[in-house]
Every structure is written in C-alpha cells, then in structure tokens.
Image (cartoon, helix red, strand yellow):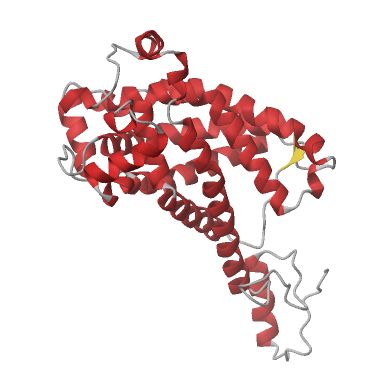
Length: 344
C-alpha cells in the first residue's frame, strides 16, 4: 500500500511554482543530452558516429546554440503539462482512495499514466515543435521560433500533423507504468526496510531506478514517435529521418528491416546518462524552492535549512497560520507570549 503525501504548509500556487521552476532549470541544464537523444532517435547524420561523436558533430555544424534547440518549446510545455497532470492525477487518486487516504501502488501508478496522457494530449503540439526545432540545422533553419514552427506546420501540413505520433504516447504509457510498478514493488526488498522509512537520498535513487526501467521498456514507442514527428515531405531530406515510412506500423517494420531491432533503442545512452543529473537537479531545485516558501510562510527559521520556527504549529495551513498571526497582532501579544501550539 502507498499513501499520497503532500506538504500542506505550501499553497497550491507555491507548490506549482516550485515544481515548475525545478523542471525549467533541470531541463535547460540537461538540454544537450536531450538534443543528442532525439537526433539519435530520428537518425540524423549527427548520430552516425555514436554518442560522443554526436556532440562533436553538432558543435561543428551548429555551435553551442545547437545544444539548446527546442529547449524553449520544452520549457513552455512544462507549465501547462504540469498543471494538467497534477490536477488530473489528484482527481483520479481521490476516486480510488479509501477513507484513510491509502491507495494501492498499482492504482497510483496507473493514475499517473492516465494523467500523463491527458496532459500530453493538450501540450502535444509543443512536443512536435520541440522535435522539429531539434532536428533542423539552426544555421540553415526552416523554422525560426516556437510560434513560427506551430504556424508553419499547421498551414503546410494541417492540424492533424501537430498530433502525428500521439497514439504512441498512449501505447507507451502501458510499458512505462509497468516499469514503474516493478520498481516500486521491489524497492523495500532493495533497502530491506518499509517505504515510510526511506530517506530523501533513497527516494531519489528509487526515482532514478523507476525512470530508468520504465523508459527502457517504453523507449521503442518514443523512438517511432520522434521519427513520425520529424518526417515531412515539406522539409529537406524528409526531416532527416533514416528510414521512410507511411504510418506507425510501417515505421516499426522499416526500422527493424533496415536498421535492426536494437535501433529502436537509439539514443538510450544519452537518455540513461540524463536521468541522474535531471532528477538530481529537479529534486535539489524543488527542495530549495520549497525551503524559500516555507521560510516566507513562517514555518522555518531560515531558507537554508529545515529548522522549525519555535512555537509554530506545523499542522496549520498557510492561510490558517496567517490568521493566527493576524489575531495575535491585533491582540498586541508580544513575541515572547505568542505560542501557536508547536507539536514538534
């Protein structure tokens, strides 16, 4: 069994901003690995020499700017994706919780998968934009910006093109969820203690393991999706894809036929290397933002540590704590007399 735990000492806006900023920072720092991964999945000439050679080829042909192509589209996608994902996930979770707030691990992961599909549906055009911007040569661009990319794809290829490959997001959600479930069902055996006693470091390692296993299982679907997003008769060399195809099934067939089954995992090295710094930065930035918010709300004495403010009841929500402070101020209580019933 698992329980959904949230910190009620943060407002909804603060929680959303913490997640958003952490995501923006981690995505931007690890963008070079994402660029190499997507170029390898599509099969552009940059990836012909292998993982390390891809960095050299991209730098020689496009400069440092080439490593951050598509990052703006990815960052713009983050906030609506996060908002929709969290809202949908929360609603689905509440439908399956028992009266004490518990839910089975499988249902929690399934809820995450469904929420991810809902969020992807709304933000998919930005993912398409990211892929197109990454596979093009930024020194000889077909697309000039995020808005120009969306507009040009819509005008030349139609609305349907903005959702090309979306079905693979749905199909890939199943093996992804299974991978997460496998890891979460066995982490207590790995650490030989119950999940409720895991340290932040253990939770971080668990997150990396879950992401690694889940992404490996769903990776072929993402590879085909990226190729479908990139291929277009309106682009030079059909978008740079290394196989030509007529649809999703034909894409799988052509990849296996001409490149071999293991080419479905092209770019997996960059993806695996990216997991640790991405989640590490995500976790660290989130905790830093959370500390700033808790300090601003009055729960901790410093934004640099989690030392609790003496006399503050940590079970109070932010608005309740503000009301208590306002009440005490109106009553002219001194700081030495004020006590909020610290339970710690």
